[in-house]
Length: 408
Length: 227
Image 1 (cartoon, rainbow over the protein chains, first blue to last red):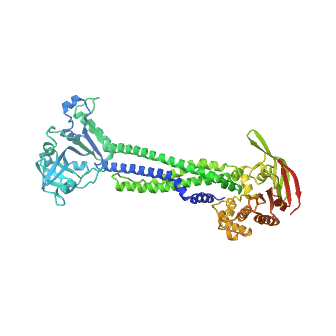
Image 2: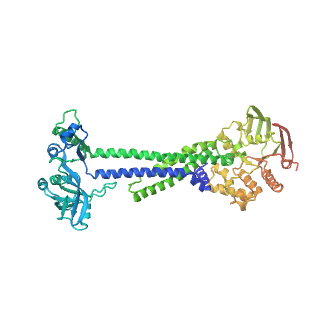
Image 3: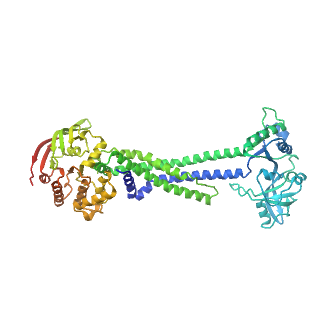
């Protein structure tokens, strides 16, 4: 007999009870839809985090003070361990460094022409633009001289410009920051949302010394910085630069062998890798939980297939009497089970994809349907149909034709 | 064509052994029209099941055209039933989802015939049993007599050597039963070998030979038509 005939028999049985078939495959529908949505949410989160982290700047090493040290060190250093001198030393002594940018930051109320806006103000050097891959949209960045002299000039992010001056040109405007007057000399190019609602354009840049003395707080020592950004020339030298920076700073801070660092360095590539791995694990976990409903769906199919075998005992007996082999019966019922599961998989895939788009569109959560979602969902459907159809099909195939024909 | 030697069939019912056939020998030649009669439990249905390749004997030889069918594997039995045997049942055994035409096509599907060829042959067979106008009907839309004629058309689909009928008129009224018997007579006249299991003497009298069973043994074997 020809194999397509068995497919026809299997589909015929499914079409004969459309409502029952759809209800039978409902478990698989829900399972597949859930798996597709969960993996889409996971992938979306991964993409958004990648975007956010690489938005900080490429080939970047972030050096921050380490407050994990003992109380003696806390008292001695006052919680501040990075200074201007450290940045200068890195720039001078470490190879393969494209830019070194020390930074202090504070939150400040900005007032200009009757408008008010609260934003983060960052005290930086001109190299900060290189380190963070930022660009000037209009006006200019302050130069080394202005930075050193502590001139009261500012470069503002697009959000700040819009909030304070609307559509008019901010260049040359005066802004009072904590009642100290500054002059706007440039506007940054937009970087967009960093993901999870954080606006990277809501920022104000000023010369390091000016911001440190006027804004970031007078409690801090005159040369303390909160962060040093070190940009390596390329990705390959990233690990090497991180090691050199660590060794240099230990030297600078006179840390004895065996003692802990009083600073920490974070390599953007490894942060990215770590967060990707974390989200990946999370996604697998979500998908596995969703996968449980796929198993439940399979049990539903097995249940109805067992009912179908009982209902159609006489049909099975008759088919055997007119010449069907046991293998024909086995394959016919297995195909029926696979087809039920596959129909469920297709409906579930559709719902899952639409659901993922709905979440992406309506919710704040990013969602991206992976390209392999389709083959994966349908592959799993086939496996579920095969596994849970195996026992009912085997029961059908081993029926005794005489008994089967006699069954009412 | 059929040569049965000392055929035995023993069923185990719990602790007890029940001997359904206790050593039966029987020859049936091509073109014969045999009625197998006897009370229920006499072994006649067991014999029919073995003849049709639905069951295997416990002992003895079932020779069919020189093959020992009793030694066939499950798959060989399925091939045997498909190629050699046509079954007609008391309860018709039509598949309710399928039309008359599709029911007749079914054995030819398992024989691997192309859809076009088997449709043509099924239509021809339905014409032959007088149901040319009812091909698209489902079993529930047909009378009992019509359903049995569809079943007969189906039994003829793969040109069997032997047609086995188990109480073929049992579910029919006298008139339609007679129509079915007339059809059998016609098929036998065309050369088909027929074996009918019945406990109805009137049906048995239509046959050209009557083999009577009692307690798993043949008690009489008469030739010649009575009716």
